[in-house]
Image (cartoon, rainbow, N blue to C red; front, top):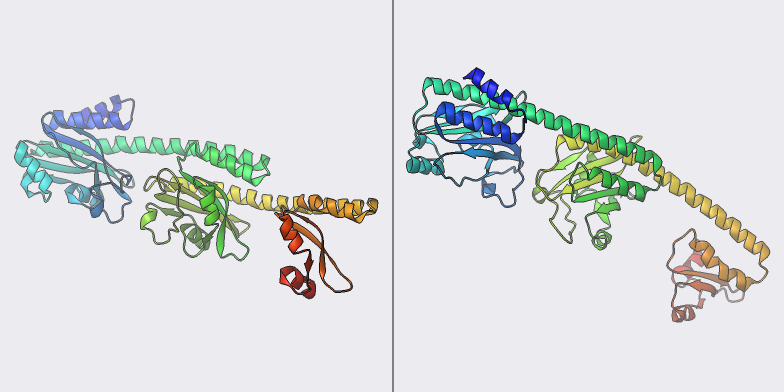
Length: 433
């Protein structure tokens, strides 16, 4: 059978999951006289919230996914997800040992025993599909008659060839994803160099990353001055009002904080089951179910963290971690450059303000006119909500309001005179701080 199997798989030129499954199932039917054949693949759990097998899957990270099923007469409503280590098929996916039985009634699964009774099944095989470094899946075969010695050899050959074809396909898919991710990194490197405004840069980065990582939430947070919390710098997916209400994420009690403290990437397949998850309410759509957090480090200093969340369980992989770590390094550089740029811009604005004030002072002889111009000049540097200038009454030592902006007229009237030491303004005068 070996040559026949190899030719069948070689002739499957498309080399996609469907074609590999089709070849494996048809050969099992043709060569083994199988009554029911299923092809399972080991993949990240994706239906953990609603899966009927969830109670038997404590980790909820990886499980067997039903890729294809073929039978001429047998109808079966089996769960499309089987936890690793559960039932004979799940154990074969963990230990890599083939299971071939000529008595289906010896199976522990009541479902399989009932199936055998209904359709007269006698033999059962769970053949692990073993790749170069990992178990890729399981080929499950049921027959109306016991497996002969030749059938057992054919099962082993079919499992090896199916695993080889599946392994080749998965390697090609990984390479394709890595090429796509590398193209994204190349595109991003150009953006990082050319865009100095951080908000515009992060918006562009989020847009480009979306091409290869179908995230639901994209966030950049920076360390506060005391390094005890993380401040939202940029967010996609969360309501801005909700972000404002949860403006600081705790370092000690959040997945993002763990990435900062440990200075390494953190991947969580199910955030609801992780005690570090700091729940930020979401407004619409699916909630975040898995997350990857990458620290933003430049010159050995942690500046903040990049967090990307998906509405799917176990969405993020080691491949995502590798690429996003490189991306996080670029964001860290851009963040530091932006902070420096903002500092220089603010210094230049202050210099211009001082120059403008000096120019106005030297050219404006009328004090009331000058005081009327000051609020607009200061607004260029400090985006205040309210502004006031007080003069010290040399006789009483009180503060007298000279000009104000942003306050209601009645407020200005009420506080037109402030005693020395009264309130924050009065204390600032007495303490000179």
